[in-house]
Length: 260
Ligand SMILES: [Fe+2]
Ligand SMILES: [Fe+2]
Image (tube, rainbow, N blue to C red):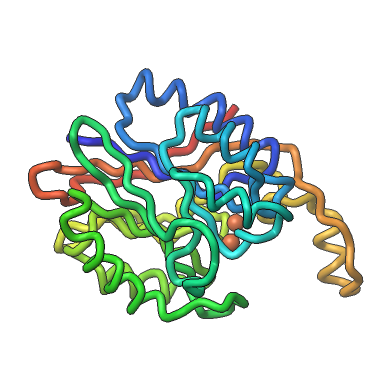
């Protein structure tokens, strides 16, 4: 059995620090084969930089994925083009820099990873995530033994629909972006592990990782404010997927929460 740990949106310094502490330990003690992390909020809650991506990879993360915050940091559009183990969402326009997938290898088993952005209540120029996933799966045939699809989206309906659409064709369809872990981890009938959202890795005494007071005020008066990354109740949140390497099917999935 192979083990895949998929870590949800890393938010700011608290998220980076807990990933840096926990990932090496989990790799050592739990025999995790693959670690993939969404790091779209790694830089002060918005985007990522080359230096931060390198430090996350150095801590034992095999591949970094991104979401709608992919272009928030200036210079990242240059850095991303030089990074092998980082991919931007696959359904962004083809002209966007960066790889649209990553292939990682462990014990002779190759896992391909790609992200699609949802289109419901999202403001990115993204093509149909269903058609994009179909096309990517065709393209990746022969290049990998299994595929992890990340659905970075707002609507649970869109995430569930993609899970069912891909059931039996990929090993896992795992959600990110809403930063709140959902209680729906399951293996779908044809062997695809699914979860609407694996939760963020960052401060949970917060609103989606940001300090509470300015967010409440913004909801009440609509005035613009800075939303600093919060600091309290830091957790790493991830899905742990057991992969049967002979079938490339998911055998199990569970939510992993690690507190400081
Ligand atoms: Fe996020
Ligand atoms: Fe997002």
